[in-house]
Image (cartoon, rainbow, N blue to C red):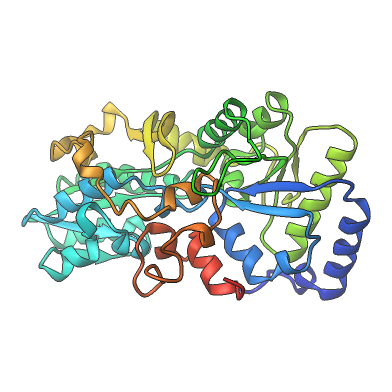
Length: 382
């Protein structure tokens, strides 16, 4: 990914920001980012090797494919087993291990008709081209990708496509952050706790997701400051964006202020994208949702409204992901703990041994936005 403007990765400007961070950092800072693009950007730029050792970066549940629950993967695999179905999916989802190590990629190798696409609208084209087959788009992602899925559903209804539907697995970011903060509040850290019994991390501040915020705006994140007293900065993805965001966190904490600040103002409007949110609200409604590592979080996912039920694959194919047996996965894989910020990737016993990008044991090593994949690719000291 190339910088939008060379200024945002200018070495001299970065050095100046690093010097200010060092000068103004009066106590250790533990911050969490909850965006897969931030995860990759931080490691790719080598920032942890440049900033103060008193700064601890914790990667949270920001990778959309990684947080997709194994029961949802089981539903995808159930669809893949139906001869009349064509599945349309983004590439990362193909390699996510499901129950008993099965994945969509392996299902395709065994004969399932699964097409890799780059836009939900490509799934509509598949439905037009294959009128005698049922085409199901596997909808994953946060608020950033949900509007595009909503567009596809509206377009399908307008075109009266009876063979198109969506398996909606979209997730909402703010409820997940609330769940993490509640967990940390209810479970104080003890020094004697061993890595084998990881506890909720101490979180001083949040680097908030820039892409999600282009849709939501800052308002849905206000509770982080108002209710939990934690500073949050909506940050961009270039080195200067991230370093400036850290400096803003440090300055707020020094002054004893907890606010949600928009550093990424060149892309994020104070009101977000009202049209995209209206489209999401028309097609989807909030519902309880399963997250890998975090479990069931109230009102943290999207489901298709009754008015569009004809395009809901869960209803059309009577899919049920409530069976605990469908969630069986490798117990040695610690992706869930990584997603909760309880351990770093290197603390997983499989990391860089059994689990590598070519042979991933869990989703955090599969996706390019996964913490384990980014850690493996850019770290040299594991």
